[in-house]
Amino acid sequence: MNVTVEKVNLELGRLSVSIVGLPKLRMLETLEVGTTVDGVVCSRNSAGVFIDIGYEADVLLFANLTATKADGFKLEPNEELKGLRVERVDVERGIAGVSFAGLSDLVSDRPERPPVKGRDLVE
Image (tube, rainbow, N blue to C red; front, side, top):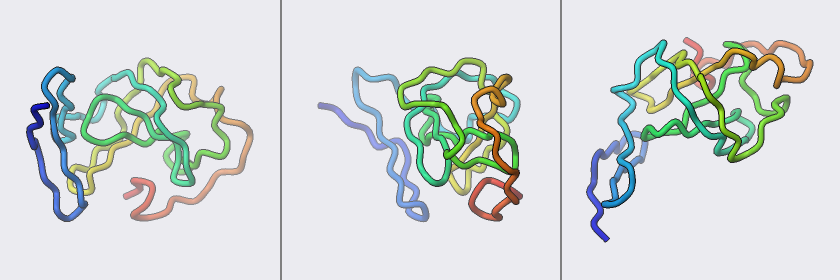
């Protein structure tokens, strides 16, 4: 198996590689706010719902810009989502966030949460 190291980020402890025969992941620095992408739900945890959009890191799905936790989502792993809009990209931290039209239909009624600086992509 031929593996090529594409990027090393010692601060974040991340190593990006490509493997011959598999699609090459795109780097976050090429992702632009406002871009429309498709993705697949890859995980849910206390930080939120993460979507694989084919970039070096999975992106966080925003319910809105102040509430990104997974407890109210009706999304399951491997569920495909089309027409996601890139809302934030932070190359230095290796994170990005997306939203999409109709997301409010997938979020149960729950109170708004205040932003958590440094954790939920809130500036």
